[in-house]
Length: 194
Length: 194
DNA sequence: GTTTTTGTTGATTGACGAGTCAATAAACTT
DNA sequence: AAGTTTATTGACTCGTCAATCAACAAAAAC
Image (cartoon, rainbow over all chains, first blue to last red; front, side, top):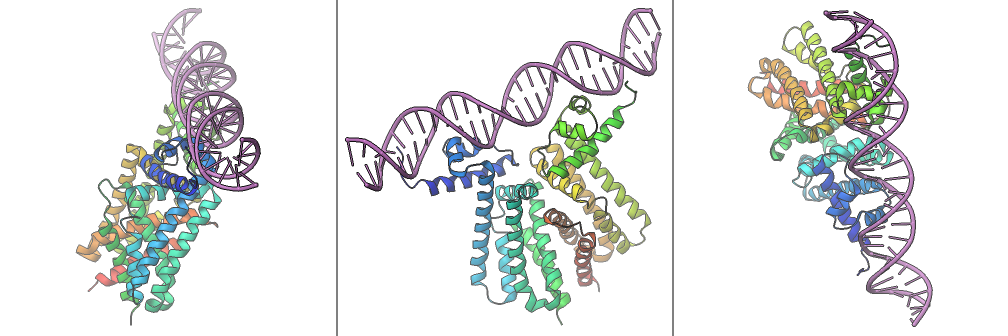
């Protein structure tokens, strides 16, 4: 009993299921069947829509990047002035949606994927570039020349905080993460101000 | 023509080969045969000595941790005073041996392993704990109460710098990494000093 | 009302890989 | 010299899984 126009629905369900399963299993060793089952369809259908497992992974990455991008843009729209914009970027990076265990686990595994799959590497570089330019936009008015090294450090710090979240046992502690990042930022800005 | 006392030699060769192969392939999807071949023996022998692939991975992790620990201890032995000790820890973390692409790639994959294998998680926590206490020892005399958050931030920053190294294309840039970490440290210490 | 397009799956193929085993051989023990 | 322990491997088992295919169903187009 096929309804028409299923393609986007099925694809969306698969993307979501891919992220959930990678997070649940904790590695890229998830089978297409697992993903398809969670998305409520047969593995054959998953292949029908995506062609290969790798394409599913890449679609999942794109989806996470899109979500993250939207969140940053939303937060940025409300912010006034460089300092507030920086805070917005950090808040979005550690938002409840992005900092869920499941998303963080998937994120880590995408990093692994980037070692093998060029397109995955490219996507991750897009993310890095966006983060960097967002940070720079806020930092340049406050720190001038010293903006670039600060942005690079802060970017690495954010990634590191994600990484460490993976090892934690309890629930994600967004507060702690965001405080650490803000702390970094503040000591940098104090040093740079007249 | 079996010579006796091969066990430690074979095991060492396998551990080394495991790290190399994980770094080369860029994931934990390395076959025991690949590892064994690189170590110059049959896959059956690898199983004979380690029992399972997972045990090989864990042995490789222990090895990397041991190397890192030795390097830190060595650097620390030469250092005088808290500031110099902090610098020593950072230098060891980004030493040529630890910051090779191959080692960094393996490191990333061990993080993934820690999501599934409890013993791997434990080992990674040992690493984190050691790093943390080394940093704290240097920081407490300089920053007092504020030592703990600084150490946590610096630890995350170091992990983040490792993570970012994975995406880089060229040769590892230890200088840049160590400068970023020192920078973080300096702005923190300035803020804390009378 | 027949043809085409879109949706869907069970069954199958083909490859690959972890772990086991039996067999062989050299060295040590008694 | 017979027996035991250690080293070593080729061949095999058994399971898993990505990807394909043939077949079926319903809507749309003609």
